[in-house]
Picture 1 (cartoon, helix red, strand yellow):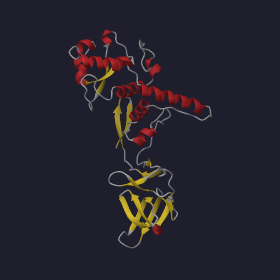
Picture 2 (cartoon, rainbow, N blue to C red):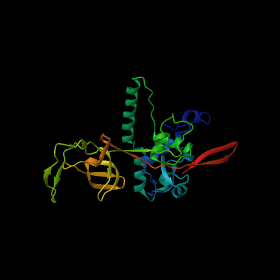
Picture 3 (tube, rainbow, N blue to C red):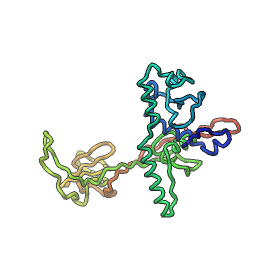
Picture 4 (cartoon, one colour):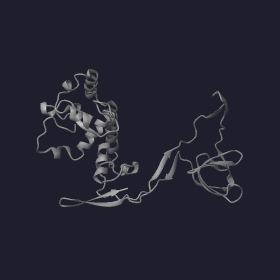
Length: 289
């Protein structure tokens, strides 16, 4: 539990740590579906709101917290929720019920995570668990933009104090499968009319292999790199970043790597300009993409 029912002024920072607020916000965003509990607005800045006001004895328990837009938060103020929603009994009933309902999926994932953690630590290798709140905390602390690959570098407590991300080119990996499931061709009504042949390799190539084709004559002169779709007649198709190139002879193809169920592609490098902000007692460095 990130919050204590009766926390003392001394020791909160030690007990909770700097990431506690991020964990609570991420939990509430998931639980309340990134929506204002009172008016249902989405895609607006949301604030953590006490259902039973702290001014009247409300606690910081997660079951007493929800999300509200600034307008609703100000309108409610320190009113009891039953007073604030006296004319909206259906909204009141929904909020009270949702506040008490736990996130079952989150509980299941957490139980699985810790079971895996316990089993893996038995092998004597260092194992670390991360959370969405921890990742967000690390990324914001480093003043980095939100991208998938930067989030991956910010997972866990072992995130280094300095992350060199300028001009880094991420590797994009996509699961494509091995092409070994049952497939068939169908007519316009959806009924099967033919099955794919069992043989999947022709002239040393298999559908899904990454190849480089150098065509020196004909209408398709050029160099093509991509995943190949093999044909028994030896005329292949190649899926490149620019699109599909048809009828490429197998003799022009050179193997780059065999199909392993994934496709690999270089992402775009991003230039991050260092920005130095003056703060009390020194300077802080950040990045602008």
